[in-house]
Image (cartoon, rainbow, N blue to C red; front, side, top):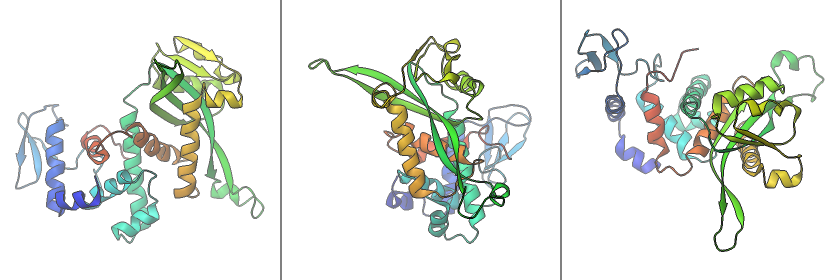
Length: 306
């Protein structure tokens, strides 16, 4: 959705609230008290009332907007700006676009949306032929550690990230040339470079009937337990261009995006930035990404307060 279409569909706060209400009704509500799924809409209160126990649910309750004092318009504009741009938008630029005074509020809003994107993608598992490799992303050194470092030294350190790419082999009937088409990606911060972290990543994100392609890293030795077949190849320049092509494309594109938009990313929030990048990459062919995020936002089990 572009800005012109957005202003026509959502000219004021009421239009945003009504759209959010309609999306909640369309996706369905569950009563927190009795578990009922049938509700009345109380227009005078802007609340839902359970037909069974008459428990009332506010429009924001149980969704990503719960406990937020920001208007629906601000939320909708933030989602628009985050989905309309291919490479993302920084919190400083978002603050300028929204005309909001407090940077921390805008920054927190964006991370809520990024966490939402990650929870949506966590519903799905990769299957088929899976390319896997690790990338090292630069993150800011915590303030406590930075005080003990010499000036100009160690301002950046690296965080290990596991990248999974669901690829499909293709063969040109006329020429016989083999290529690979990539479908979906997952990018997860690894707790360590030990095999336990990689094993957990595969258990949580890959189906057991898949075929995994990796290099010959020592921490990949147990992957055959979690997939149907594990194929390894010695790491080389050719491997990065053929066997693990899409995993490395995702790594390089993510690094380039983060370098150009975000600065001094904290290790605590790196996963959220990866969530946004992978979510948009997985839906690169979708016509309206804005609507997809709103659909995810109305589900009552996405967001949990920190």
